[in-house]
Image 1 (tube, helix red, strand yellow):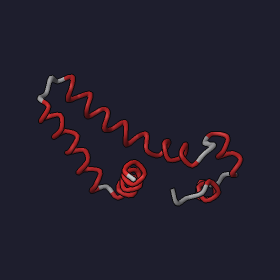
Image 2: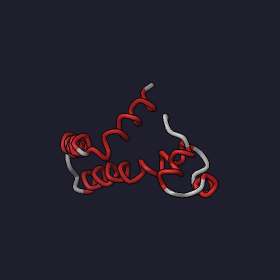
Image 3: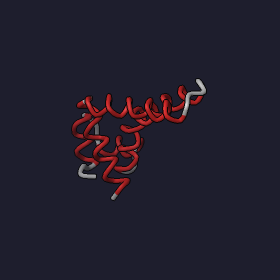
Length: 88
């Protein structure tokens, strides 16, 4: 987690205390940033499960979403960060 609340507040144009009111920790900031991407995966999984898709089709749907995110410059740095935090 190579960022500070001060840096985030500065980029957002708000005070650190205002940021900390809503996001008291760096983890809270990271969760807020990651939540839309994670929701995308949950939505893909829900759609696959509701369609009674095979396990293979379900995995393919999630893999497809991963490839799309890997091509998206907005998400790729978040996913690398998330991967290293979870794996290591």
